[in-house]
Image (cartoon, rainbow, N blue to C red; front, top):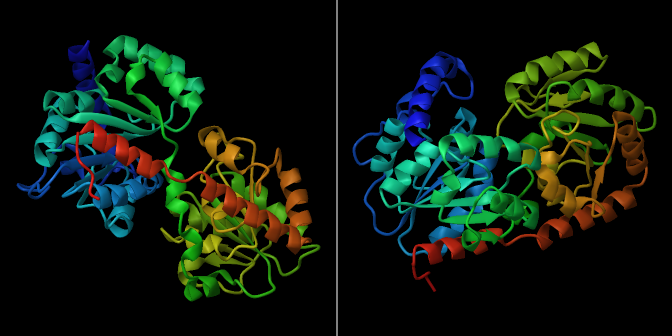
Length: 423
């Protein structure tokens, strides 16, 4: 089976490579994606080396607290971060300065994964969520590298696909040394897929730890001016929106401004290349609109076309809506604004953030079934500032109560490697 999978992976790669070369998410770093790195790329080893992989920018940010814990608690530890997307690589270089190296994950081909392993020379490979890449895992085990899944997430609606895939290529879970799962349900699913019970732990989700000090950051006056955030003027921020959601939000803004005429809307699309189209859409709806990068302090609608400013923007919000929840995307991060004491509204489709919904609903997070309900709830909250403050405090407290997964994960990894942690 491994030979058949390896052969199939090469066939699929050559068929898809022209598309991958052109796609905005994968067109950069082709040498690194083939496992080709300059001599001495990872630097000298003075202690254990951990290779941590997160597919996207958001996934890497969820790993960031673990990097700090590893550096603090494991003597001489070095960390190499890999990602799949161009935006992830760019963000990691800017915001994950604790990592010793940042590069692209190799394509899941025997040659590429083998070359990457030789260049990085890790002691442990940490894969996030459901990043199960058989050739990468096989390359690690061939070289005696431990393999760990962290923030383990296996959607119930995809279990049958995993079962079919594993039956065709062999079950790679048998080669994984440690499964650090987000919650009990996820642990049950991974056991059902064949993970050895003695290797499964429930440690929580490290993305909660990324929010620990969010409220302590200072506000950015330049961003506040660009968004038109003024004392006494309400600001609704729609974060991580996807195609189609802006068209639902603009009529809601019209409706809310009947009672709150100074209300402004800031939209942060999940993919910033959509920003000019959203500005055009807002203008077609009768609003003045502009891009954050060009400065639009007096516009009714401002669209964030910059990367890495959403958290700072949330601090300026009166009320927050998080997108990906009125589409089939399955939601986006609702805890980032909650950690800053903001009431968070989100739609019905939150399948990929089930644990976050459990944390927040009833504690400053409000799930709505339709755009009409979103408009009603938002209007009610904007009319009751004392209720906004009360629910915002609940939201911040709810996030603080679920932190600590990063420390637990590092303890498990250190134990796996039989490393004595620093005092």
